[in-house]
Amino acid sequence: MTDPSPKAPHGLSRNAANYGDREFAFYLRRSFAASMGYSRAMLEKPVVGIADTASDYNNCHRNVPEMIEAVKRGVLAAGSLPLAFPTVSLCEPSLTPTSMHYRNLMALDTEAMLSAQPMDAAVLIGGCDKTVPAQLMAAASADIPCMMLVTGPMLAQRFEGERLAACTDCRRYWARYRAGDVSAERIGEIEGKLATSAGTCGVMGTASTMACIAAALGFMPLMAASAPAVHADRLRFAEEAGELAVRLITHPVKPSQLITEKSVENALRVLLALGGSTNALIHLTAIAGRAGVKIDLKRLDALSEETPVLVDLKPTGEGYMEDFHAAGGMVALLRELKDLLHLDCIDITGATLGEQIDAGTSFVDRTYIRARAEPVSPVGGLVSLFGSLAPEGAILKRSAATPALFETEARCIVFDGLADLAARIDDDTLDVTPEDILILKNAGPLTPAGMPEAGYLPIPKKLARAGVKDMVRMSDCRMSGTAFGTIVLHITPEAAAGGPLALVETGDRVRLSVSERRLDLLVEESELAQRRAKWAPPAAPKRGWDKLVHEQVLQATEGVDLAFLRPEGV
Image 1 (tube, rainbow, N blue to C red):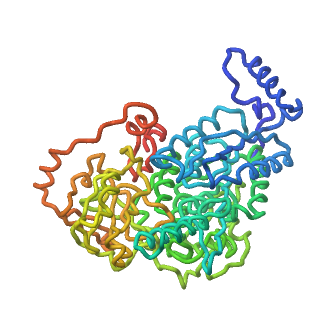
Image 2: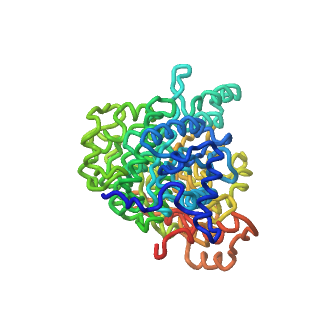
Image 3: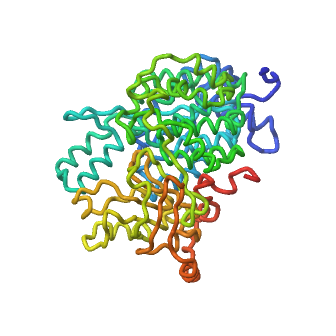
């Protein structure tokens, strides 16, 4: 690649405010910038923007201020001017109805700031579940040279003979509390031991999965995906990010060069081999869609049959992200998958994936990253399902499910939204058995619920107390990447869009067949026609972001993006 023309606008000479007098706009900009104490020489340097997602509401991003300072060191050492700017910050536990409802808002905000402000390249700092997808969606749309820097996972806490980290252990203990195995006093004690350091969830949840996918797509060095938030390596990676961003100014590699059909397929392989989050499929679909690349669920299924689960971490295994990092991280994993990957895909430095793998450490700890000959599972963690209940598809994380439930035909118990679920799930008079299928509808992206992580329906208390650990559960919403169980998600079209799920009633029979990749509602078409005639769509929101989402949001199979933000024809 050649250096840009020396006459090309750079740094603060980019993106002038429009006063009808271009030179005045730059004169005004420089004078205001000078008020912050910058010298004229510094103001003439190329600029690296740094997306600052720190927030007092976002525990996952507690280390962002320190990381920004490390990025600035790298930028300054490489001869450019670092300028941090704030964007929307999303933290799953801190937002109502759910952080997913605001992922596209953050993407829109970040895209606007990348496009409107004067910068030659950018470092995007994210971590908590929806921030990394939002930033990569923004990068794809703005298509300016960007690199990703994640906050990193928290450390697991040693407590009374076991290790704990959010949030798989949160769910495990909460399930035991609901079953009566853990006292109120004990659950309160555990509450303070689950998240004891800065960083994202310490398991292979959505945040960690997306960090690995970002690295697989080429947006950061491979080992930067997994270094713990509190490790000195995290700050060294931040400093390196600053240097690499400066390199992007003279040797530009744009997101459109990184997000290709081949790199997206590599990312899907990684998702499957990690036993990664179901949410990551929605996010990767949205990111790819911004670059004009479509993800086909049937292609995903074919890849899943060829790609083994090799990473033994919670929620599907035993380890934590700190173990994955120490075991060799993404370099070791990709080396095991090498013959399945498109090795000619490039990263932000222009190096090919094959070159990155060969340049990485050869060490691997087989406790956490298995050899192909001895996988955690010989097939991938996700499967797609189609049928009369999910004409456009649904997803099951088989690596976190109970194989004995893979072939189930049973009566269903239907909950019509989150309020109905909360009101009845623990009622001892609820007519439910362990063999039944629990179904939640009207919780998809078109609803006020905003497609929350409610697909992990709790086991009814009376069954939990009797020792029931898992049941088949289905919905048009999502589940946390830290969750586990035989759970069918993202049923498309969703109920609020008038899909077949809208017509399901308690007492209907539903058939799940993982072997046949089928999900079927066993109700006569004449009966469904009568129900369809009585169905009416939910009322639309009247204003603000909620109204815009309702008018523009796409279904799960299209990444739950907003239609007007995607390229034409995608």
